[in-house]
Image (cartoon, rainbow, N blue to C red; front, side, top):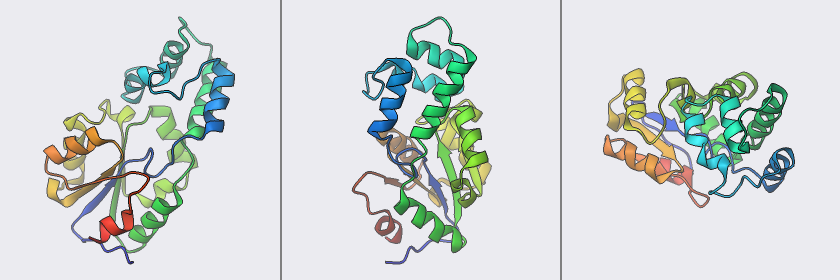
Length: 202
């Protein structure tokens, strides 16, 4: 099947669990060795404090102090934890990359909207290959807004100078999908079984 695209459409992709895969067990194990905590479960402090970190409200030092239940964390410890955190979200989905390469090669308009802390987004923009597919990139930590707040979608629409119906949004998180739909964006709810090529072709 060949991915087809509309010349007037922006394709707006999420990063985590769409372009990247989920962290692997070995990644969580590395964080556990560094912290002494099991951080993978949804109830863990890693996730409990993540929204403020992704939104740029909490600094890396503040976030990791909250995760560890401490008043403060020294700079070397913060750097080590940030390195492990960036590494565990750096595993890429080859099928999504193939589709991005096809779309970019055909001249499609590609943008990215991700909930991601500032330093992680700066690291990926500097060191990773996947940002080259995108004309525009938007990160929650840099904007001070976080999905599913509709204001972040309004900001993106304004920056792209696009009508909602001309921006197709791909994300794994249902609340984010619902927020985009509330503004009139067509969406693809991405999951492990999603045939993204077929969804885009249709």
